[in-house]
Image (cartoon, rainbow, N blue to C red; front, side, top):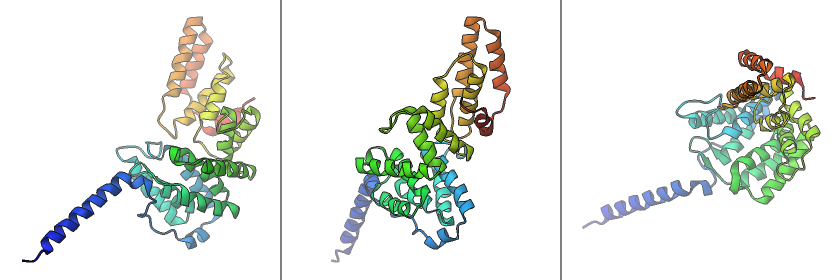
Length: 285
């Protein structure tokens, strides 16, 4: 009597078990489901288009597994995954590298080893976007990032900021404002770097600037307006109730101190639709 049905059944069972093991441990393995990157497309991508795509990619990286201003609804991860694949298909290798580490459709984080090595290769050729992406991926990879990864990212972040890339300026500025990642606080340089990035249209990751203006809380109308302006801009990239909470606190303080001018300011701020240019034009002095 032939035994092939038994062997087929056993093979199916083994295959199912292996697939189950992979599903449980997929984050420990490099991604294999991405198409190969077409280097010829990268050569065809003009500098202006590349800069636009980079800004979009960097704006989404802090929210890669959550809703954002751009991706809302029941499946933001799938939409982001599709978009990053399209960006890679257009010739942005940074999007392809980001997908090797971050898998938005599943919320999975894959090993950094290969992607960090490739980013270093690109950085050595002068690719400032690659210099900045190291920090973005290390920040999101959490405990998968080694101390060597962090040191590599810190080194190239400074280089990218010196070369003027807005994302590197933003991330280094935030670290200097907040004293993060081994950086001693340096408000003057940190604010200068942050504003340089905002002037280039980079509107995400505003915690550094917001913290700076929150620390300067006073009854000064200009200071309160600056803070509310940046809080308002923050809502454009992610879901946050901080502008509303600021107005609640301001009105509470105004009633406690019987300060009619503060109540009027709260009403005025609530009616105003601020842009990032408005915030930048107000300055920080």
